[in-house]
Length: 176
Image 1 (cartoon, rainbow, N blue to C red):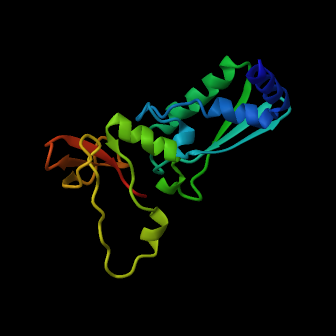
Image 2: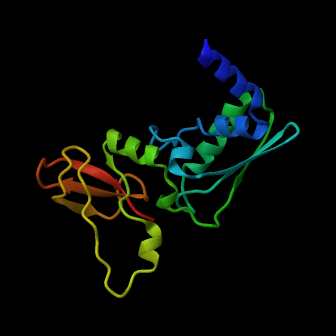
């Protein structure tokens, strides 16, 4: 009974913006369906003005082919909840970085079999003359004995690796 009261109170005290954000946050990335756009960090802002909702998203790459599908999925998610006036803005600045991914999103990648980004993108931008690469942990067996096969994997934001111990190939979500 107590949980119902709290849930009811939370429902009554939510702002239209919080409600709209929650709707937008349900949309999944079409290329990695275990991640929501919130997990990925591309959901940047949601504004509500009267009956209009404006959602701001940032692509992982400026030419990301998933953006049209995400725009359509956002409009469909809002239409399902009764919103008819929805605009989706695509912004390129500031550029997306893997630092914006949530910890939950990184854990979902790991469970899905994609090695999550390791390290911080901000640190790479300020590196000295010698750049060191970090070992990438295999999402199957957790070994650090892995090797990059190709810089670009199934999508531009991933590289293809192979584990030298379990011999399984896997995608690695690159630090950007």
